[in-house]
Image 1 (cartoon, rainbow, N blue to C red):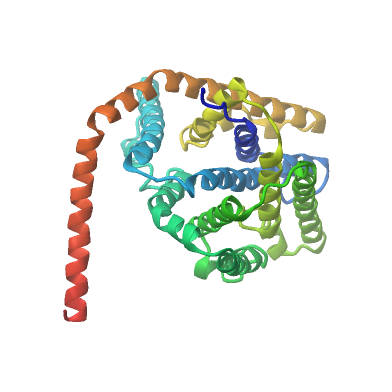
Image 2: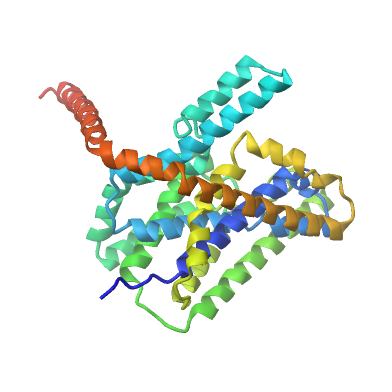
Length: 384
């Protein structure tokens, strides 16, 4: 019997999640966030429509990744595949940018060196916060997965309740409380990873609930959208600096509204019966490339120059131009990543298949040396 073709429900959610992320980023790149975030009126509503759903996309993307990672083994090859894609984009974009600057005669060696540091060490320099955090989660995943797989449902429920109370309800729900102590996107990503693990292990399959889950996700977006406008309204009318500074407090992906919305969205798509679609799966395979391209710190300012939508004053045109520009950016980035998959990625995978064993042996030697050094320090410290 042939292999059963996988359904495309998760892949479609991957596309939608990345589109929400691009929407949020571009609303800033287009100058709309700076111009309208602390104002009232139709243009503020248009801005928030595009802006507030970004972290629903981020949390959903993490849920998808975590859902499949909790019972898989993270190995060096997986990490190198991810690193290869990131490295290709950061270095190639940097190289093209340097060539253009040289042709224009505007070389600034300090800026070039700084951007070069981001390009050649994208994970260490947090060129993309998501990539740095995700690589750390990948490295930790064997240990996180042991916790996930070993706990009973009762113990797991208690652990999840504690994590949600501390990081979602308190840190994500009460402005500024404890954020300096235990805040951070890495911790938030791990919390969402544990939520994905719980869904994978203990959720019983329930059919015909997709509509209910998607309705909750939609209502979460509406609450986030309306709540943001309400905070802005009160802040503007009372001239409250604290409120105006925290207009988007409930937008981060660890906030209660976003967690409820993203989990509901994920559960809804889990229960959708979407048959295998080659087109959806191919487009979904490019989503990470879309993220790396459009949010690159060299590309983002270019997008701002290409689409200065903040100069438009007609509300209808602002909406149309913004949506159209986002679609163009998403399609172009998808086509570029598809081209990369058909060319550079094949060469990189071929290289890894030939040399992975030797690379892995060298990495393990370094890890063993570091582990041995830590062990010696521990023995010396404890007087053993």
